Image 1 (cartoon, rainbow, N blue to C red):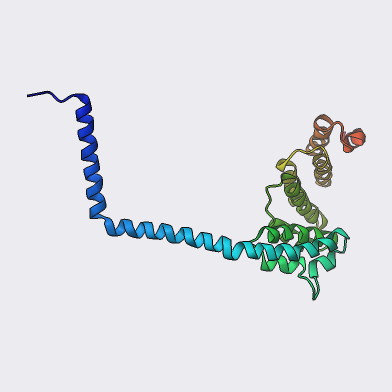
Image 2: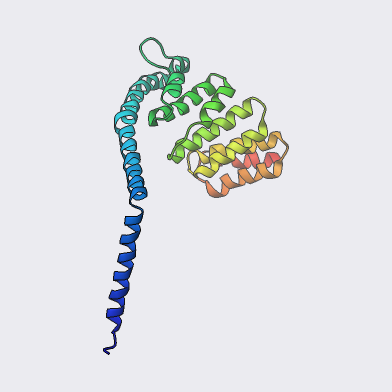
Length: 223
């Protein structure tokens, strides 16, 4: 009897595996068809949601936000927040379009507006809901929460958010400014060791920043 070579054996194994697969499909045809139908339904639902609901909604939110931004840039924060008969204010945009990109950005503008108006708890609530892949904007938002906590006397919480702002990104323009805020918050708690660490970081890591020009004054004050 002729001995089967390695290739013949491999082909036989493949055929056997195919036969088993075919048998499995035949035995489970209904469940498999149901799974395929569910996958198609999920895909179609997602496509419909994005194409016929989310995109138009975001476009509408963008139009509303554009007007509110104009008032924000003019420092008319109350008008930007409240809107009028011709446009939705930031507060309503946040409420009605929170699932959209523009609605998310409205949380940032609204939070900063509340902060500028001295409405610190509202500022915290809005800025905590803001999400962003832009490290600069996210860092500013975290520092804004820190400012709000500082204003209502919750110094530990303000330090927590200043540190978050610093950790998001290290930027020559904004990070030294946030380090100063963090150091001053530590000084309020008479935690001079951590305050010194913040000032020293400005001196060593950001020597060309505006804050570094007077950093020795801050260091001498706590030494």
